Image 1 (cartoon, rainbow, N blue to C red):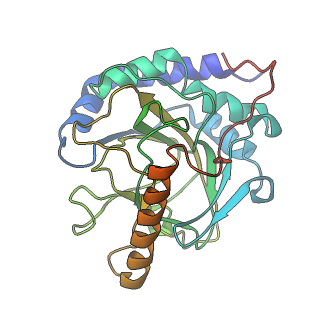
Image 2: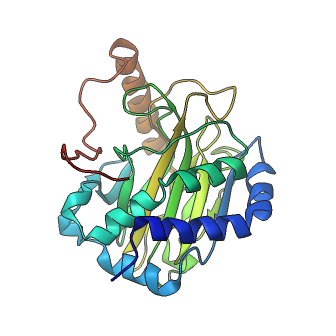
Length: 279
């Protein structure tokens, strides 16, 4: 019998606690740029391999393809193998939320059982995620989005394969810092008005798989934060696309000023059964 979500969470808590001081320093040393830390070998390698093997096929996920992004996402956990839901919700264990809150030196925060914009994702050759700021709030616009957790499961992933997280500590006029989507690596990134990030195009015939969660809070990560929709830009070399994406972000912000909770309900939310329990 395999490990359940509580046992997976216990392994993650232990790893985080063992490295707490180093992770605290990494996250908090750059408070004016993009704050993040990463930790390797988060879980036993054989368990991470099993998680990766349990990922659904692309045909069983939802393709999000536009000028902004090109990736497969999955949020309806009851349609996938139980191990996928177990690892997604392991990161919502109150013990993990608390230790990450302490590492990131922030006030109260909570996980999101509805998996708004979270869950799992997969990128194959030529897929990408352009530079952007995450939506500042949760689906109901009640809480601030403060942390983004990304756990990578594809074995033997290398930097030259693409599909890596890029953070832009000096904004899009500077150069990005690349964090490889390495097997069994967890990245925790602050999400505020400075947290521009992207995912470089995948350039190999392989799938880069990721488990993702967001944490939310009653207060923003930075005092300068204000409400904004997910705001995309082109990469610095993409002048025309950048102009189009600027207008796209402006138009969507105008709509949200008139309709604060949007016009169309975001489908990237886990619709749970009445009797489903993720505790």
